[in-house]
Image (tube, rainbow, N blue to C red; front, side, top):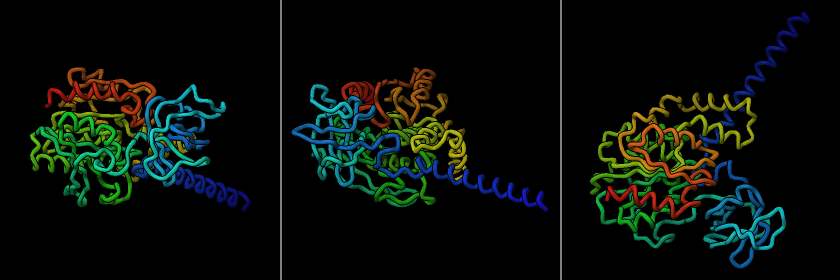
Length: 375
């Protein structure tokens, strides 16, 4: 009797432990599959505002707050823009002073909790940049997709699409530059974004299904005067662009790709985001398996879109070795294996989605050279 009870207790303990591990894996996978659009990723630490002065803000000293470049500063009900670190400004040893460019919404007060974000602008191209634009609705697989259209004189359109940790405000970082080159720009919101249809399961599929919304944007562009398009994607938006070129019936109308911080291996990205939520290392494989079970994602289905032999159009990759979310090694490998089509512009010290933030002049020059043959 004692043996039977002990066996039952052991089986129960194993069952409970197994269920707990599955639940933990499911929770860990939420870091990528339920990443809210427009919210900073868990790789971005929360910073405390320690003080403000004319043109300055003092923040918690971390590796993130010491990064070079310009960033949005997102808090509860506020959005500001900070520029470079001001090393000469007096500050305690546990803080850092950055130039405060502007407060676009709300206010910054001592004690506020904020995170850095690559999105410098809020609002729309009119209110944020002073650009004439039209709000359009694109017929999508799941329903109407909102987009901003900024007209231009050329018959090559640039379709921009954000990825993880951002919304359709992120492409406004480069929108004025693209407009200056006279390209029409179509900035897309896709399934799961505010104002767009919800994914049937409520999950982010890391480009595996979302690419169909980008395909719908290509159809809209070619039906409204675009002779060809350039797909400009950040993060999983870059994955969507690669899948569109691989699978769209209109892929012959795609003249090129711009891939910023591209997610070329979804498992590595999911592990990075789960680890940023302090998931213990032994549970990271469970997070991957949970994501596969919840979404049907499998490595071969995602990776084949980024396989060097599948690439058929010129691509500019903006990426760097300090991206903690999308490993740079995969971008470097793609560039090494397809030097005939791929140009890699490397940006050191840049976090995910923020290559332009750290190196705006270098990225814009790379864009100018890449886009000139398509004018």
